[in-house]
Amino acid sequence: MTKNHTFPNSKCIPDASGISPTFISMNKLSKRLDRAESTLYRWSAEGLFPASVKVGPHASAWRVAEVEEWERDPPSWRKSHAVVALT
Image (cartoon, rainbow, N blue to C red; front, side):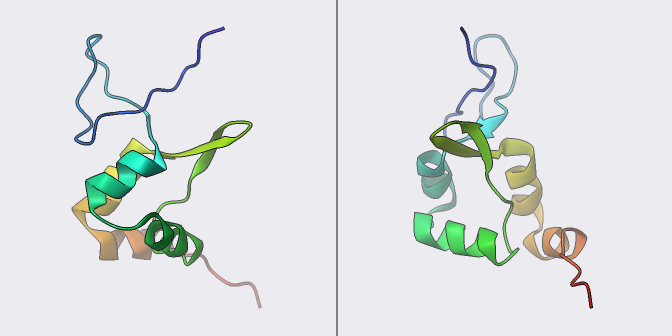
């Protein structure tokens, strides 16, 4: 059985098929952003960074499109993805 997700190189270069990858692993994401894994997990939990998604029973990854959106303008990303508390 083949998997539908791929993990990109640090610069998200399309593979031989010409299709850009969909997901990025924590290890590659940490290197790409030059931030510690613990920092990215904390930012994600605080709503300052995109959340990971489960890609397998013991694996999580981030959607490349969401990470790229965050990279372009983190403050705007936070505003557009803010969680509204119910009171």
